[in-house]
Image (tube, rainbow, N blue to C red; front, side, top):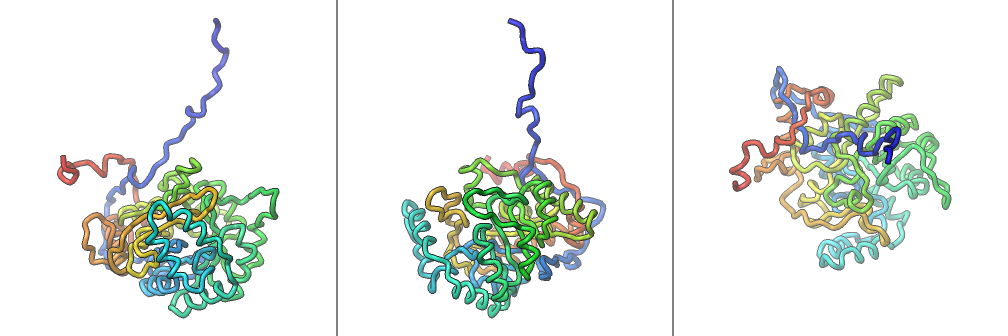
Length: 384
């Protein structure tokens, strides 16, 4: 039997390699600097920060008290508008139930807890409480809720509104409701609007043209997120950050406007933070690493925004433990050797060793493909 005249390409023929934090390493250059001379300051949406750290819009991570403490340390926390803080007068009681529920009951409890309505007076109260704690108020909501709550949050004095979904794009189609028109939304809401999450150059480039103030990168890398398992969607973070950073730089070259890139999720240790910035990120959004702080409301647990879905949860409650105050997690002194404490100190030391005095200079250091970096010479650590 004769074969085909021409073979059509298989999809796997065009698979491109992609890279996560464990696949790469940062290569030393020709200079080093004193760690004390490293400047970690950065600006997002007109808000100046002393460190490039944002706290994820997760109920187990951010409340007004936590926002105030992170602001004191130089970062910014983002409150989940669709979480328990906006549904209950006493969210601590609900958080206690979720944190202590048996594993087999927690998913039903999450769905029940998040079925209560969002209340205007509580949204206004939380924004006021965050300001009273000494922090700027950054609020996150899904696209479906943004049209309703974005203008209200602006009226109540919010400083930044984040429209966040599992995958964000400049063009969203829907037949059952009127989808959010992002370019119109950013023009008429009187506070900066950030958008997430994406992993794609073209999507990021189009979103920037719609007037967003910052863009968040990451689909499914978080420790409490199961999107990659449930939906099969995601791109490893080093590749995703690099692609979106390329869109940022292209857009800046064309327009002169700089849109900060926020690496969102997948970072556990100081080296991951350093690699994320080297890949092109301007800021780093952390969830589970900060949920381990004494000040975090989750009592040593964490779960994602999509975990409470009653029909298709894309996250689960995880037990991260409580290891100490937020200040020690960020600035040390570290009591462990695995890089999960003194995260900012590790980032500063990495930048100094690579000769990078600023975030922008760190984005220019050399990155190499090095899948052996985690195991090379480490046999005694691994019990072999």
